[in-house]
Image (cartoon, rainbow, N blue to C red; front, side, top):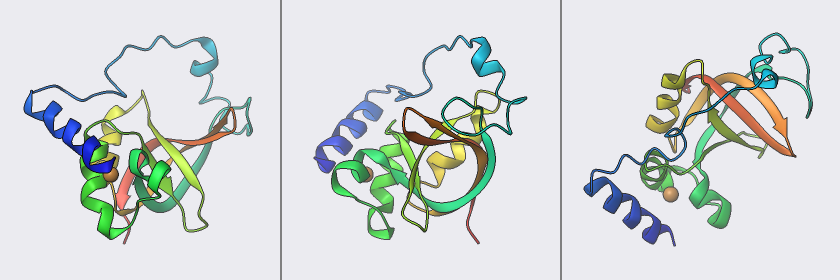
Length: 145
Ligand SMILES: [Cu+2]
């Protein structure tokens, strides 16, 4: 499965396809989204994001979810998968996994996620819980020291 996925990714790259699955579409923001900065103190499903700084490994979710692939041995695959458009996650020391999503206010910050897939990082961003899913909207990412 893993190899097949990478094969598809490589094929897409060879064809010059911009594998921008997550970002290649337009968003129209409603009022609820626009309110998130002022509601930054609210928590929980209905609230806005909570400012957090988290450490962990950037996961390639396409390999982690079915196979729990992670760590140094999988770092190269993670980088290829995430650059190819696979969703990225953060695995913290306590074993929790957070979906990583770009911030529309600074989408460039998410390049750090793509460049550091499979590595230990420190991420600053806003933490949300939506429909039972824990997600971090990424504002900055740097390699853990
Ligand atoms: Cu992978």
